[in-house]
Image (cartoon, rainbow, N blue to C red; front, side, top):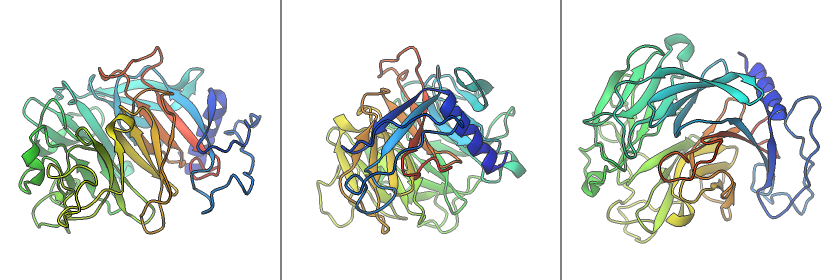
Length: 392
């Protein structure tokens, strides 16, 4: 499927299913009229007083939310195939689902394409991250991060075949298992791990716990890592579950704090982010890198992360909201972050940028900490009014 066909399909879906319109800032432009041609709503041009002072892609805009799929159970990792469909990993069921590209009156079609029998879940473990190979049309490879009885591990598979582990021995616990997988703009596979409730692992450079890892598709330490022969890209993390890159190839990560501060960090190779010595911006010790943004755990506990235009989106569990952080050209934060979707869909687990530039969000209300409704769990598509996501 071509990019044009993918966009046309998602435009039709947005018109076919219910669309909620939210306002990111305090300025409202009025509810848009539905488009009879089957495209997402056409938003009016903001007035000068309502527009962002820094130009397009800022926080002063509206966002349209469309529910694409319902009835899932703890969707965790999401990756897109060339035909426009998405593969979704369900944490507790150990199923890999294919969502779309076909659709019906209730949303995108959802079917199980594989169950990963090697998964031994429980607590925060299970089938977690999923990444599609950048060369999928050639190698048909999918990468997954999952829990077994002994460890967390990363494996490579082709759909329908058993997974082949490429990196094992990632510390396992009922909590703090990390689990996000994503290919970076450099073509290498990045993985986030937790401290597995053993605080000392995060500062141990020989442990895979409490780290962001950078490996080849064969599971070897990637060339150019801070320490030759080690997969460790950064250390001093408590539990990272979200990573995303901006247009300048800068890496950002969401991190769960303990009782006080959750963080967004700008990740640089070899840097130490302080856990368990510090939490949030509580220390100016020069050996630790300070977070870009911090929130109280009650309004954050952010898991997934994605970048659309100049906006960094963080999907939050306990906070039940999507934080939007506006980034500058140098990678700093511009102004105050804004929260949207607050309490609208419950706990938010995953954020990922779709091939058409829209933002997909997955809920996590069946994870034993939420209050699932009849439609949970859901995948929601967001389109921003200025075209910074969901370009057409």
